[in-house]
Image (cartoon, rainbow, N blue to C red):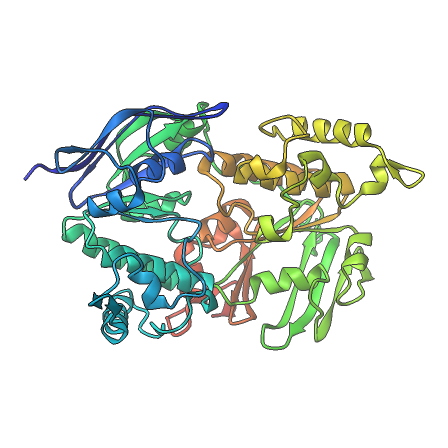
Length: 516
């Protein structure tokens, strides 16, 4: 048999006012994991929707197993052996788990769905995915995002596909769930299935990928790249079109570094004995001006909850938070903001942005008084401010009147950061600052965070990516089950040490004299 299972040749697709794809080529071999990379807006989503039969290309051809095919609908693509797991999950909330898995291919006799048999086969698929605890009869809408992702994967497996497209499949998964995902992908590879894997996490690409294709501005700019050996700098350069020597900026001597007496600089943010029932316990740390402190831990370890409690979005059951030596009123966002604390939350679309509003309006939301006069909002002043900060942060597109929903993930995150710069915060809390952000935009955000720290901000970063925490921070706090295990210089710890420390039941290392 031919080693090639899929060929997409010269794929072109235009929408009103937008040329989304301009002659894209993609080849996938049997039993390989082919990674599709590109900045947000590069054309990845359009390309996979062409393959899935959602969009019809304006030009180009698709071959599966050497046969030229035309997918006029998703049903046609599925019939040809293409299964797609979208980043934005397409489950029917009110339908059962089994019903979603077999939607469109129900197990039936004489027109009647055989629910018991369907539930049994769905349970087998869920067990294969390592999630036998999911009830096939439960409505899919009741599951957490990670559980819904598993259901979507089970549906793809039920199709006996030749080609499976996975669009950011690990975004909602914990470390253990990602490990299990990779186990399934390796099984698919050994069965001869071609997997198209889309992710912004380059460490995942190296672990699970075979080859890489890179898109930029709707064109193929790199193909047949070895996923194991191609350097991050080369990938980022292809994606962005400009040379990037370092992904993480060089660390500078933070203001919080030890002074001549060895006692350390003055803290801007102090957290003392902070506790919140069933979430985290007795957390204490300090952050100085110009210092970046990273928090690492598994999902559920209390990372995000600590940031939200510092910001006043949650009320602590015990302990205190001080800024500049002044205690903050517990559970008060207004008090935290008055003290100069800003938060870029984990889910920027639902928690930080007004998607229907302009870039300029989103930037000014926390400081409307700056663009108002006598209680009236001055739109021209708001636009002027948005333009100035958009230029400062290299926002694309640069027009501050653009609805923020049209921006890529990286540019949306820049808008959130600009909001707090305009507000003039002293402490900046960043929760998953690069989630859903492509590698090139990540490098820009890392540089921006370092620049802000250089201007004297005290920065706290939470990330599920250990490499990001270590690469960006001056110091790393390691959490396990809501308790602070270690507080060490980032230069003195490795990813494996952090992972060993946070994993319950694993042998842990001793860090900075604090046993794991």
